[in-house]
Amino acid sequence: MRPRWVVLLVLFSAAAAAALAVGPVRLSLVEVAQALVGRGDAQVVAIVRDLRLSRFCLAAIVGAGLGMSGAALQGTLRNPLAEPYLLGVSGGAAVGAVLAVVAGLTAAVTLPVAAFGGAAVAVALVLLVARAASGRPDPRILLMAGVVVGAFANAAIMVLLAGAGEGAVRSALWWMMGSVAGAEWPAVRWLALYAVLAGAALIAVARDIDLLALGEDAAAALGVRVARATRRIFLLAALLAAITVAGAGLIGFVGLVVPALARALGWRRARAVLGASALLGATLLVGADVLARTVRAPAELPLGAVTALLGVPFFLVRLRKVA
Amino acid sequence: MIRARQVVVRYAGASGNALDGATFDAMPGQVTALVGPNGSGKSTVVRALIGQVPLGSGSLHVGALDASTGDRRALARAMAVVTQREEPAFPLVVRDYVLLGRYPHHGAWTAFGSADVAVADAAAARTGASELLSRRTDELSGGEWQRVRLARALAQGGETLVLDEPGTFLDIAHEMAAYELLDALAREGRTVLLVSHQLNLVARFAAQIVLLHHGRVVAAGPPVDVMRGDVLEPVYEWPLVVARDPAVGAPVLIPLRRR
Image (cartoon, rainbow over all chains, first blue to last red):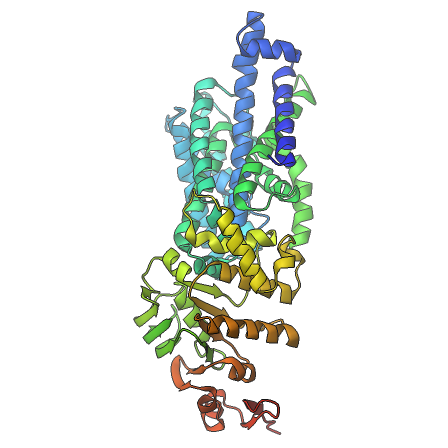
């Protein structure tokens, strides 16, 4: 195994240890390890297993999903600024999920499916707007289309949840700012299952991403069925984004920062970039969540706000490079 | 080989046909050049060969494979195409880029093995790109990038090679080296189809020139038959003379000034 994979695994483990040990009740690593296998003080076991482990897992799933989704979109669209949040895909997913909530379909199995429906509509819409505007998807026009779809999604969420009152478990603010605070076991398990399936499917089409990153004609000349492959990758990226939204609401910029970081660290082929983005995204989001709940403790910062604070300066630097 | 029969292509929203019954052959063992003015349909032939534009009618075959309806991966194993422009959105290590030529030989889950690496390295050696293999694609000069792209095409292993303007961005030495390599590849039995504006250069290397005009083949044959003032002048709509170059006696086209 290459050294940089080892470094990444070590970083992930460190983030995991911090996520399980740090909190209102500060635990030693020994206590955490004992609690994980069910030994020691019953209260500590409950804190580690029921509260922190589920929250850590959700943060890891969401980070990995956003990282992979961003990596796939960037390669296929040949656009280093592409990511599910900025393209409005996450917004569409949130509308889908909120519609399901309003309709009373809050089961852990169905919520990601509803979110996926919304995300797929958003993907189609963004591409349609971008094509209509320029004939061929221009990187900047695509982004503008995404921002517009995202704004529309935010408005729709506000309107949908305005009359929902007490019945709606999660508020509009929760959906729009993102949080992994509400992590609960059966739901997290479902999300993990969906994420693993979608992630594996993306890894399977990684070579198509490599070739599409060369341009449509070059990919076609190498045997890729361009339209079909593109559609498949977009849907899988949308599915991953939808899974993260169903679990944690809108969390921006992770999908932007993480693949760029993976490439800067030396991963280049799509399969490696996807894998590294999953691990890096998980590490980053777990770390960001530890920050979110410790910086102003006992108050908790919304996770989406933390990632935006970190991601926006990064976005501006990238934008200058592209333009 | 490539066999085009009465190929008609019309782009959505266009008033005329981009290809209007084009018929030609590119035979194994020789370089065939596809020439013609801007908009004559040269690039459309390439796009039709890679399945990026549907045929209105007619047929287009690469060997026994139908280019318009056939299995794209099988086609990519039979024919490699170096398109006019190509730039990876994200830089790759050159060896990984050349290895992408092995894509049509693998399914989603089979890994590239040492056999693929050997093919890629041999292809790079053939195009003089061996010393570039561990570089990054964004660090290459225009000439180096062209050699690397040709190596990727050779790594595909097909019998047919299609190149769209292979000399663009190359200086004289690199351009001549590229053409000599293509000539050598053809002599080994490959079909080489060259799409180019460089009539004078093409006349030195091609066994056959196919002249396209308004999507139709208006002349086809050995360079001496196509490189004639009375053939070229009406197509290019510009006064010109064709002479013999003093060094090797090949036909040379000299455009005149109108004033």
